[in-house]
Length: 321
Image (cartoon, rainbow, N blue to C red):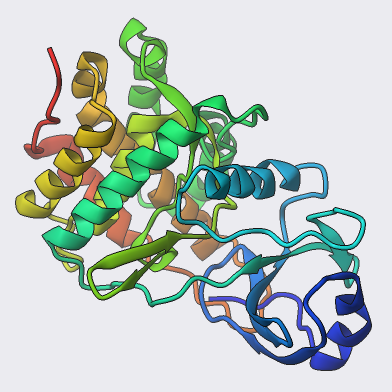
């Protein structure tokens, strides 16, 4: 949880004049996320979310914000970015890129049941289908190249056993990435971080996906795997809950049917999704950054999940043959 760049109400006064939202009335830091500084702001036009981007550049950000606008225009429930009086979605605040988006109603569902997982699966499929014709291309910046770059930075801190596990899984993913099966996987814009705390519900009704700032173009089945590895597990053990897995997969499949290649890639992609978050948590744990509210996540959670996805049976995808 982090606020890297403090912002006061006095800071917002002149800055907000460029937006069609009236005066800022209050601001409160949001204690979630470890990549950006996020705040709830109350204005004369209502409640919004302000994000200051700590790692992404002015050049990178149009992909994320224009993707959100594209998805919102296609009926996908996501926050809508607010343009300033020059039509810009990204504006400097304290010398860093910043953006304002609409605030979603509801709250995160941290104890999801099958009905919630089905809602997530259906909306994720709608997001993938709606993003097919999005014109901007940007790779998933936390995919294979980043794994290669980051692995040497964490290896010195790991036991021999964990070094072997990490190296072996990166090697496995390298090999799978070069196969015809992998190259045939459907792909397009993905959220890539659709955890429970990045989705809002009002009761059993899904009200939106947010925090798209790890989004990129990748295989859709990787996005599904990231989602299942968080929404459909026993948190204490990482073991998959088959009822929740099938609820999510069947709801997704009803909107965008899975392909035969995706069925073959399913277990490798569950492993890839576990590796991606194990590695990022290792990096945040051993290479911490300064922040007002930063508490790195425990890396062992995704280490457990990776071991389980390597060795355990996983529910099969509902594939059209």
